[in-house]
Image (cartoon, rainbow, N blue to C red):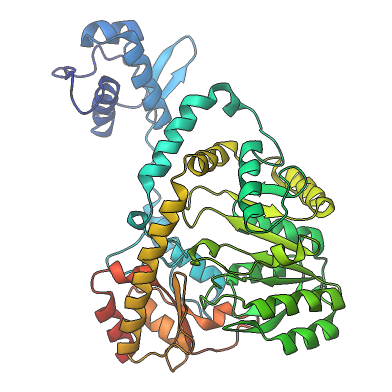
Length: 479
């Protein structure tokens, strides 16, 4: 038997000019009655016309309120019959309680555990910036929001199309102008491809160049996520020691001769995790060795804009002959704006574009339009300068505090958002102790392709804004 209610609530009245819209008020009142079991499963709600007459709101308001209730899973629409209260589903409390804690450190701390931990909801004692991001209040959310609104007003019907597989053309034009000013001969049609962030770009490069069993040279230490991606392609990862001026060139020469690698992936400017930048002499030698041993060089420029300027780009020296440049905007604008790019020679770019289409057709044009809007409105340069100044000040404070706690920094970084510090003991053991106390630390073993034990830790300078972080870290070090 179907029960029908005659009104949403005996005492409910719309409150006009309130903070909540009439749609939200009506939907919330019906939802409350469902949650309180005043409306039982199977109850038919009043028709749209009846509800509008009884509550004194428009039919459009009732339609939107009912649609919200359907979207929340509280109400079901039956064509020709009306709207009915759905049967309640019991929460799976027992099943959830039986699951192991996904953030508890495994027997051996690994990259996947660190990634899960970095993306968990922050707590009062957790360290921010663990995912390599700057805090929102260090960036400029208002600038990004203004660009989103401007794009929303202008695009209209264009949002329902796929967009260009190569990427939003005006953004590629803007990127070409920026890169050409830095000496990189990037043509918007022949040399540029947008990606869903730098990680996506490096993934496309790996898919194109790497076959199972191929050797790939990576820096040691280096960004740990790329190790996992290359391993998934069946690559043999060979670590090249990284120093303050760049990779150990003698080792690079020896390892390239021994392993015949397909690629060498290097983070040239503001290296993650050390913060160091490639010297001009090392840059020329890397290209000389790439020519001698016939391997491609992938230049990761993720953190390049945190450098004060004048850094040498391999893509500029090589003119995109055997260098592929990867960059993006997530670090300086917003992590949710997954907009990156690859710059490469025309033949390689065409093949990378084909792989991009096979994997996901196109990248979201909305984000690309937002980044383009930010770039053309002229605020981005000043924004980068402000962010860089704040990062620099925080890094100096972070260095001083870590030193006062007994850690050492063998080669202090001159730019960037990371400090690579020596804790003088097994960093994985220390990270496990910290995790038990709700504090996330990134041990140096994860930044090595060999995962060898290390005394190094990577710290994000954004930790300086966390209340009580230094006392919490001091307690972990004393444990």
